[in-house]
Image 1 (cartoon, one colour):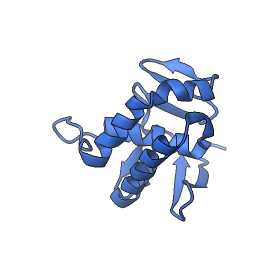
Image 2 (tube, helix red, strand yellow):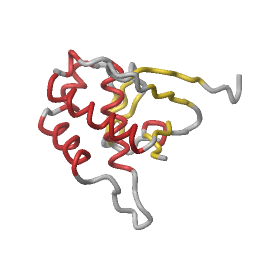
Image 3 (tube, one colour):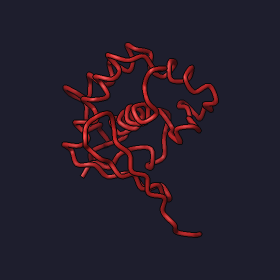
Length: 139
């Protein structure tokens, strides 16, 4: 059915914070800055305490979409907005844990796409130039 939206509601990690994800023609999921910061902090904790193989699919999606958001949320001068503190810590942790390589081992059906990778099982592009629906819109 044309125009039908698939609404997925999922709980990220063990907290009661609920994010609803609308998957439609390149529409990103909206999060408040507080929700996004919580997700970034949790993603850092997950990366530091778990191996990629022990992470849930929801944790992988949260990490990947957070990194995509950090990379592609730009100001009017096309400079990245989220670069300091917790955001830099997430990026540094992803790099130091070699997360992309480890995630590719967990999901071997992944498909190289430009400079990034598409993970069909997760329905997420990671790095490269992911479409907007694979990033969060911070409101």
